[in-house]
Length: 82
Image (cartoon, rainbow, N blue to C red; front, top):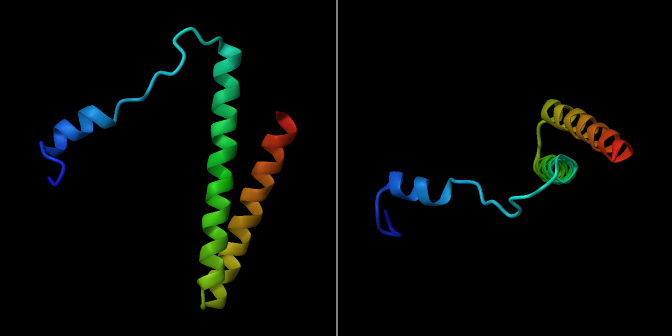
């Protein structure tokens, strides 16, 4: 491994979640999870859009358009809930 150490050592060091606030309330945790979900969906939608821009197959373009539409509907629903 280029960074030194084994893959297992790297996984143990970097794969553990980072605790930012030990005394978070359930409400604060729910808000953080909600925001992370929204951000993940936004990133997914942008990635799908990039794929759509570079796609050449019409069937695949329609598939991507449907996926983008569904993702945007999920985003809108999450935003109205929050």
